[in-house]
Length: 257
Image (tube, rainbow, N blue to C red; front, side):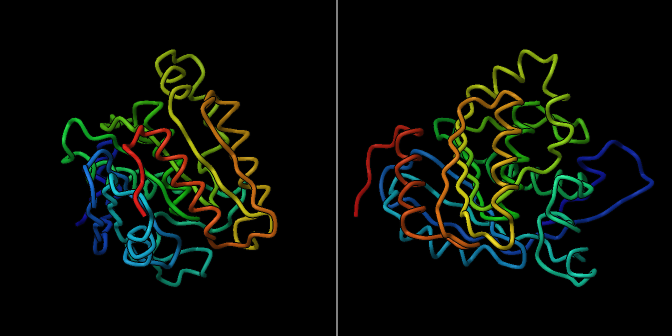
């Protein structure tokens, strides 16, 4: 599936990019379908990697949708093409934000969720760059619009980010201020962030600072979980935490082993 920036952009025809998304993998619920979550992989990965992990989780009531990011030049790799949800040159608060790429990926996630039944709870989660995109989707949900001011169409029930960071963090608080609806939505949106203290790709302090930035901006229903000694990968203790948190927040019927 491709999304042209002109379809979600400001209407300007001066820059037109088309993002060609890769294959989407779906893990069907093994029990009663109660929730659908789009799960986003990290930089250089693909949707199939995470679909294999998610299939093993004791969450029979969740349908998982695992898309694959577009293959595009990535600045942090010196312009070498890689699967990436947006361009990134440096994982830090000072790095410029690729709002166009973020908007395209957030719109792709929203499009994948728009066809779900009306009684199904919706969520987005991810690992590393996928987590960053999930958190960007959370801010779009609260603000009611993408970075390009086009309306955000999805009501999210949960957001999960593992080993990630918050894009556009420098402008978030100013954007949130003055909007009672954004504040109300942010306060009620459950977010789970997990980060390893030994992460050598996305430094722990970036994850911690992102959590503090979100909290300061009004995202009050936020859990930040630290894993001592964990690097840039996931472990059973972390996925257990995600399962328990999702079961509680989504009011799922329960798990089966």
